[in-house]
Image 1 (cartoon, rainbow, N blue to C red):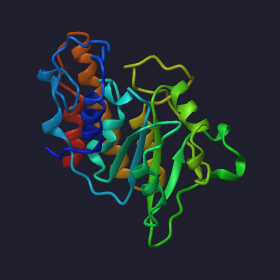
Image 2: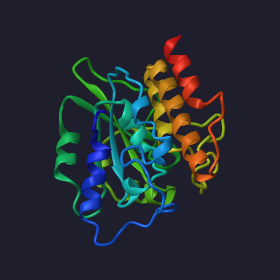
Image 3: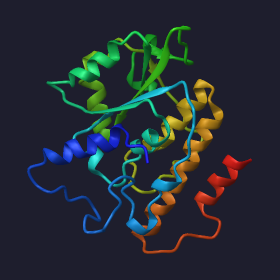
Image 4: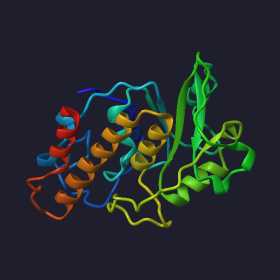
Length: 238
């Protein structure tokens, strides 16, 4: 199994905790990688894709510790995914170097209504010598807004926004904003906007696998015969 940036960040954040993180369901025995109940682990089922896109997950302090986080699903599939803990006063130097690396064209993924109109991009445009780096502010809606407002180093980058055409399928956390999507759901729409439709579909289906297994474990149920994993495998085989 490929160990990715979110796995590493989880271990780093756990190591500097002064007391145990008590998330909901903290007494449940979970896989330390997919964060699902051990008997519902999906690590061996990860699809393999090829993409020209990269992601930067800027995660609020304890977001990486939450079993319900979906940012890790992006890192599961997109090999060039970077992840850092957000800090208002001391932004990670490696993250700042990444943002200044000329091989990338960074885009901040955030609702256009919170940005100056001249920053909002209608589509993804990169030069022949660059690749897109999609910056996801990963946390609750209130935390994401705080990161957006208080990260001046992001102000020089264009904003990519989506308009959800259907409600979120997440249902793992209660949304605080109408039409609010999970991080992985947003990423799938961004990848579709970029033109990698099949990768967007696979990420959407992988999100469904995680959501179904998470809720199955939470409610002590049994996976249905027509499971999300079965649908994912059928799509990949088609």
